[in-house]
Image 1 (tube, each protein chain N blue to C red):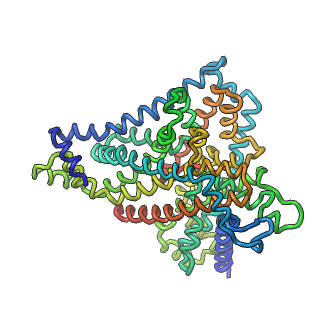
Image 2 (cartoon, chains in turn orange, blue):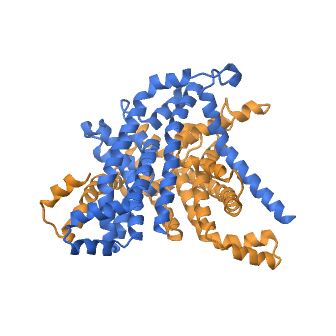
Image 3 (tube, rainbow over the protein chains, first blue to last red):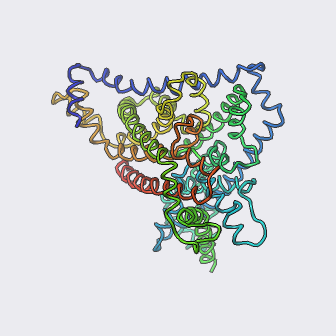
Length: 280
Length: 263
C-alpha cells in the first residue's frame, strides 16, 4: 500500500539526514502554526488591557479572582486526596487478589476514562439532581448535584480511574516476598501497609496525585454541565471571555492555569513515566 | 482476623467505587429506553427517545465521526514520521521538542482554545469551517500518537535493522516504509485507537471552537443536557456509550499489546 509513495519519494535521492528532516517537517509546521504562535498570542493578549502586564498582579488583588483561585485549589486538593485513598485501596485489592469477576470490576473502574467532562456532569445529575436517584430513594429533598458536593463528586468520578491505573501499574511491580517477609516477622497488616506498601508506592502516589490535581484544576466540562454556583477557575475564564468579553483577563487567567497544570504534570512525569490524558 | 477485616474493608471500598461509577451509567442507559423515567421502568420500554435523538442529532454524530477519521489521518501523517525522527535522533533537542508538543496534554483545552481563537478567530472562512475544530483535536491527540509509536520504536534495535537494509542498498524512504512502519505497527494501532477515542469524546476545546452549525457529539450532549427532557438526554448518552465503550476496550487491548513489546 505504500508503494506509490515510495516510488514518488524515490525520485528524490535523499541522504538519511535529509530524510529525517523531512520527517520532522509536518510536525514542525503544525506545531509552529497551531501551538507555538497561538500560545504566544495568548500570552501577549493578556497584556493588552489598560493594566498591561500588571494584570497578573490584579488577579491577586481582586477578591473575586482570588477566592475563585482558592476554591478551585481547595476542591482539587480534596478530590486528589479522596481519589488517592479510594483508588489505592481498590488498586491494591485488585492487584493482590484474583477472584471471579475481577476483570469486570476493573473494566467498570476504568470505563470513565473515555467519558468527556460533560457526560461526567450528567452522571452526577442522575445521582443527585432533582430527578436523581438519591432524591427518589430517600425521603425528603436530596439535591446536591449543583452544590460544591456535586462538583466534588464529579471530579472524583473522573479522577478515580486515572489514579487507579497509575497505582496499579506501580503495585504490580512490588515484590510480594517483601509482604510475606513482613508477615512471617509478625507484622500486623496495618504495619505492612504503612511500612512496606506505601513507601514502595510513594512515587506512584505523588505522580497520580499530581495528575488528579492538575486534571481537577483544569476541568471545564463537568462544571459547565452542573452549571454550578461555585466559581471554579475554568468557568470564570469562560464567562470572562464569552459574557464579559474581558479578553485580557481571560487570557491572563488561562496562562496562570496552564502554567500550574503544566508544572504539576512535569512533577508527575519525573516521578513516574505515565501519561494520562487531562480532560474532564 | 485482622487480615480478613482489612480484606473486607478493601473489598467494600472497591465495590462502593464501582457502584459510584457504574450506577449512574446504568441509570442513563435505562432512562434512555424508558417511556417515562419519573414513573420508572414500569411505564414501559421504548426506542422512541433514541429515534428522537437520531432525528435531532444525527448530524452531530456524523460530524464527530468525520472529524475523528480526519484527525486520525492527520496524526498518522504528522505523528508517525515525527516519532521515527525523534527515535533516531535521541538528544536534548528531541526531548525539548517532545516536551513542547506534549503541552496540550497538560494545558487545559479551554486555554488552548482561547489561544487558537485569538490568533485565527478573525479569519472567518477558517473559523466557520469544520477544520478549525479538527486543528484542536489534532493538537490534543498528536502527543498520544507520537508517544505510542516512539515507545515501540525505542524497544527495537532500529539502528541495526536500518544499517542492514542500507548495506543492501535501501534508500532512507524505502527503509522507513519497509522496516520502520511494519515494526511500529502495534504502536501505530494503539495510538490510532487512542486518537479516535479521544477525538470522539473531546469537549473542552470543541465547545469553544464550534459554531452553531458545527456541533460534534459531545457538544450536542451538552446542548441536550441543558435543554432536553431527561429521557432524550439519556438516550443521546446511550448512543455515545455504544460508540465509545467498544473503542475504549479496543484501545486498552491494543495498548496492552504494544506495551508487551516494549518490555
